[in-house]
Image (tube, rainbow, N blue to C red; front, side, top):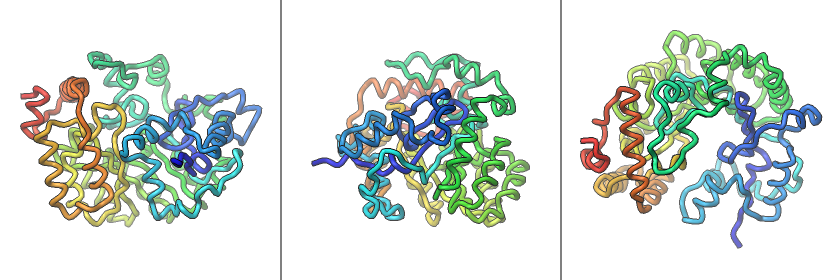
Length: 398
C-alpha cells in the first residue's frame, strides 16, 4: 500500500504575516487565518479545524488536498517532490520519526515566517505574493495576460493593490498583525528551527525583534537573496554575527549573466561582494537552489564554482511552463550529457533533474514560456543572450 503519511503536517507551520495566511508546511497550499476564531482560541494557530482534519487524514493514510499539487501529483509520475526529499534527508532522521505522531492536536517544532513581501529583487520564478518588485512591475506595466491559461500570480488582486498603499510601519500597527505576532511569540519557545523568509528579511525592521525573541532556540535560518546594498547589508551582518544559532540560507543557483536575468534586481558583482562580507564576518551560510528551465542552464557552472558549499535543492513546480523539462530537445540533450559527465553525476540533485527533464513538453508550455520570457526581458530591460542559440530559436527570440 502506498504511504501518504508525512511528519511535516504534525511539526511544521508557515505563517505569512502580511497576507494573514498559514500553510501546514512550506510547500502546502495555504489557508486564510480566521482572525475571529484565533481571538477565541489564542495559542492555537497550529491547530485550526482544517489542520486537525488534515492530520487525521494523514493518520488514516489518505491523500490530503493541500499536498496534491506539490507532492502527491508529482509522486504519481515518479517525480521529485518536497515530501520525498524530506523523507530521504538523513539529517532529519525521518525513519526514526515515522508515524510517531498520533494526535491531531500538535505543537510545531519548525516555523517558517514570511515576514513580508518587501523585496528589491524580482526573480524570474517568483511572483507578486513574495516580492513587492513583482507587484510594482505588474502595477506599472499591466498583467501578463496572453498565456494560454490564467495564472493568478501574474495579475494583481484587490489585496495586492491594497498592500501597495500600506507602508511597512502601518502594517505592523494593524490589530490583525499584532494578533499574528502574538501567536508567533507563543510558538517560538518550542521550536527546533525557525526559518525567516520574505520578500527580503533584511529590508524588514521587525526582523531583529523576532531574532531576539528566538535567540535561545537551536537554529535560525534567514532566507536572503543578498540583493541588499552593501552599506545596509554590513549593518545587518554586524547585528547577526554574534547569534551563534543563525545560518543564512542564500537563494542562488546560477552565475553571471544567467544570475542577473533570473535574479533580476541584483548584480553578480554585488552578490559576490556580499558573500565575501559573510566570509569576513564568519557568518555561516548555505545555498537554497531553485531550478527552473532557465536556471538549470547554469547548473554545472554553479555547482562547480561553489563546490564546497552545502546546497538545499528545490525545483520549480509553478508556473508549469517553468518546470525544468520545458526546453527544446537540443538544449535538453546537451544539458543531460553535461550532467552525466560532471563530477556531480550521481548526486541527488543531478539524478532528479535528469529524471525531470525527460518529461514531454506541450506546445502550450512552449508558447507560455515564449510569452513570459519576452515580457520579462522587455519589462526588466535585460536580454536573453545567456540562453543557448537552439533555445532562443525555439522561443522565437532570434
